[in-house]
Amino acid sequence: MNLYQLCKIMAILLSGLVAGLFYGYQCSVNKGLGQLGDKEYLLGFQSINRVILNPMFFVSFIGCLVCLPIVCWLSYRIGDRTSFNFLLIAMVIYSLGVFGITIFGNVPLNETLAKFNINMASVKELNLQRKAFEPLWNKYHLIRTIAAILTFILTILSLIKIK
Image 1 (tube, rainbow, N blue to C red):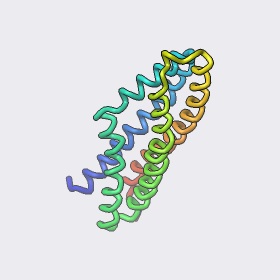
Image 2 (cartoon, rainbow, N blue to C red):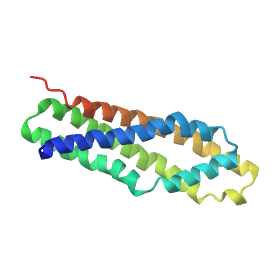
Image 3 (cartoon, helix red, strand yellow):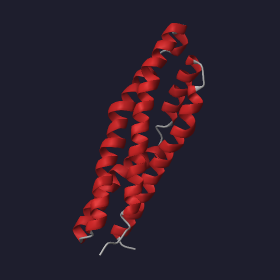
Image 4 (cartoon, rainbow, N blue to C red):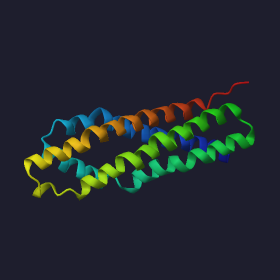
């Protein structure tokens, strides 16, 4: 196995892990949290936002951001035009639609929520905080979930050999 093949496998694996995480979250965690009362919802989200910041998450989330440009460049360098095209599109979608949305959309909302003192807030303040957080966070999450799935599909399609 050469470096190009190894990088392509890593791009597929890492993009699949991110897509799976976001898809699973979209299908279950968001819906489960959404059924909770305001205080429980906000406490649950604060807890999840703290624990997601771990090495396993960063290996896949940042690893994909690093791996995609490398494998894209390698595919260009060896003249694998079909792979290059799929990987270039995957790289752009991941960079903007997954990483960009997360950094400029979800993370600022998470940081604002982290600073919110839930235990000192009134019922009205809890409700206002949730209304300011939940719909926008869920919208950004849906966008990055779709982008992550598209990235994964494109990295798989990069395996196709067109002559």
